[in-house]
Amino acid sequence: MFQGFPEIKEALISNQMQAAFMVAPMAIALRAQGVPIKIVYLGHRYGSAVVVHKDGGVRKFEDLRGKTVAIPSRFSDERLILFRAMEKHGMTAKDIRMVEMAPPDVAGALAAKAIDAFSMGEPYPSQAERTGFGRVLFHAKEYWPDYISCVLVVRQDVIDSKPEAVQVLVDGIARSGLWLDNPPKRQKRREHAADFVGRFYFRQDPGLLRWALTKPLDRVQYQPLTPLRKDFDLIVRLMRQTGVLDRDIEFSEYIEPRFAEGAKTQTEWIYEPGDSTAK
Amino acid sequence: MRKIILATAAWIVGITAAHTALNVDWNVAFNDRLPVAKRKLYVAYIPVT
Image 1 (cartoon, chains in turn yellow, cyan):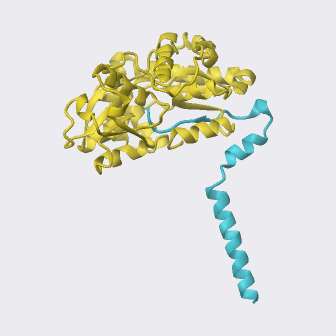
Image 2 (cartoon, helix red, strand yellow; image 1 turned 90 degrees about the vertical axis):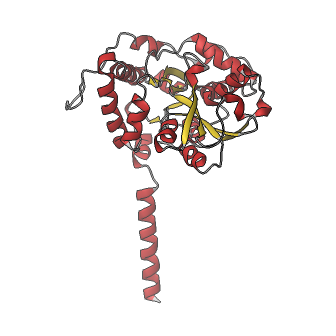
Image 3 (spheres, chains in turn purple, brown; image 1 turned 120 degrees about the vertical axis):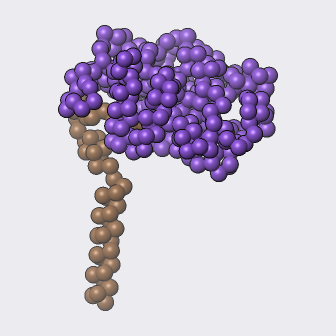
């Protein structure tokens, strides 16, 4: 587990890590710079929001003019969503001061009023809401239908030498997504997943993750996770417009679609909360 | 003099042991020495969507 995307980037380049979940623009930028990686699957859809201090006087997006907003990275969808919102409200990059901040630090910074707002993935918007000092100004999907943020990237040498291992990984994510998004069982399964992940992976309060995964249930979605050209063409266009990508890059240059194709026949995990094993 | 040398040696051993236990990821270190086909795939993540 890492605490910031720059550290993940370095671990991936140095081959300390062979695969990683990272923000999509960072993956595209790395590939454009010649780093031998490919995006093989999405981590989720939606799950990012712009959050303001409850007492900060920001009631609508235009009120962010002149304010300081934290983002996880220059190479993040959370930054691009701000540009989309600014474009819609007739604002430019000069109207908002963006600062890069490690995701775990933003809720504390907002509580202390060191920043006026943050654009970040869950569970940090939930943390600000749950503890009472923050208010969601808007969820990413309000300005960006089919929004994606974190993607699964794998080093090219691993794709070439161990494609079966990559397929197992992608299949597992696909099955988990289907399991979490099964309509009649979503609430109970997501609560169970929050408890499990909070204790064993994220080391975060399970109550916070329950909030992020269930209030409301479509706050974060896990289908469809196949990388689609139209979604990535939009990200590349926004990256070019906002100056974080210095050349056009073809979809096929940074996407390896065969693992997502291979996962299309997968079904949800056969597992219910309380079972000892998953099949 | 002997006491100083022993104390220094104990300090160095203690610090070295603590460092290797806390700061070295032995799973990664051993994994790197395995044949490519047998190496585990390490997936990095941060606690955020």
